[in-house]
Length: 136
Image 1: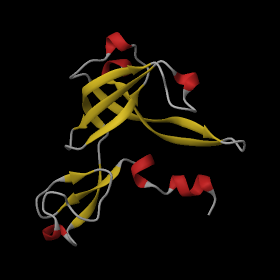
Image 2: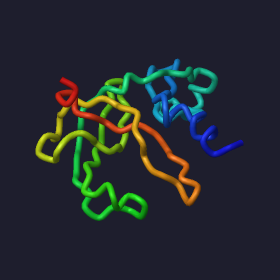
Image 3: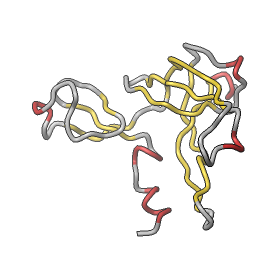
């Protein structure tokens, strides 16, 4: 299997798909095989669930010293986002300046380029978040 096709087939990366527990109703992202709340009572009761991609910032920071491969993006915003359905994700906030994003800022997921891999230049895509006011 080629790397680009492999990445495209990961629902959590491209479509924000998780699972919903038929036992307690918890939405899990990324997908799991058992609900951490119900444990074995959830076996066979997890169904695919598409998240809306909408949420609010719970914490945010500006990254000035990025990990290898992300040097050209610095400085950038990194946030903990609570999705409307309940799960929390850590993601980059784009199309906004640090003073425009704070705790409680409504955001939504967008599909963007994450990184370019190796000498072959394979581009990895995924979700990032944009403040709601940036789309007006």
